[in-house]
Image 1 (cartoon, chains in turn blue, green, orange, cyan):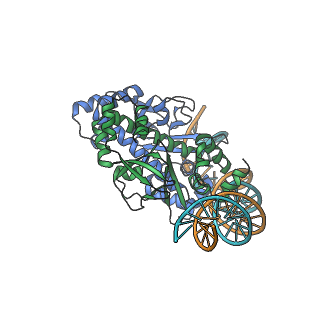
Image 2 (image 1 turned 90 degrees about the vertical axis):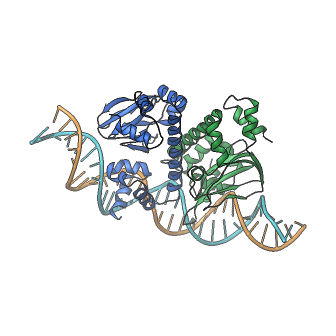
Length: 189
Length: 189
DNA sequence: TGAAAACGTTGACCTAGGGCAATGCTTTTC
DNA sequence: GAAAAGCATTGCCCTAGGTCAACGTTTTCA
């Protein structure tokens, strides 16, 4: 049950098996079917999720009803409504599974206790934050001043599995394109 | 010389004066005039900067010659080409002062040594990363699915000083609008 | 301090991409 | 396994915002 999570941690820091087990013991298994809502718009996020199987998506809907997807997490990745988890304000975004999934989740309290007490865990959290920050920056640079075709090519380059794994509609909302436009672009790729 | 930096640190963590002085001793004063380039496109970033006076800007230029600004730092703020600093790859972005400035800079080596040895400093770095991440997320949500007018209003809401402090051109490149469009929008605000 | 360069604003025009709707196709549900 | 709901694709039309150019103003620096 914890093999993927252990692999994730081991690949990022050196740690003995006892500490590893102790870390894992704070993660509980959650099974969810397709399109299950893990966090609602006005909820305050209380858990960090690790994807064992399936996938989750973070997105919001603005007042005109337009969906914007911010993040996907697949097998072996962490995901949560981090801004809400960090400062305990309402998420103003949704978190949902997009496939039948098995998730491991840890409570905010346990998570930060691990960060404060286990140096290797603090290091991993730092890595997650650094990587998240870098990815966000790349996305800002990558999406501004790019036309639709360039955005799609960028995605094919940097996250090739995404286009095959998620629906056209979700990929479009991630790229900031309408589904029709994305469909047209793909036709002439 | 270190008063602003000390205030920054003290406002975020509790720390004794000796540690504070020891931290500050790693920061060197750099004076720069307006529009001075602190980091070139193909450079790898080696310093973290704290703005004592003036302001800096991080931006890139894509192959069509379009400028995109990612970040501004003003008095009392930290700024650097973080992705490059973190993983020591060429920045592929520029860092420049946009006013006559006084900066305090710390080398990457010293910075990470402080992170690893001074818990309060590690905590501040974590805060910077968390905040940077949250800001980036807000920007992704805020700018996708917004039209030009909404973007400008968003900016007036969230960073009101920016529009008065930087040139129309730079603000436009931050918002992902052409200077003409931003100008037109401001006229009917 | 004065010439030159850069910037802001505005008008006229144009185009990328969004909205909408029609038509299959696929997936879900009971 | 049939009905319904949702999704992808595509054609037609339209509009937000980009480009380009002109002009006045501000900034720069020799």
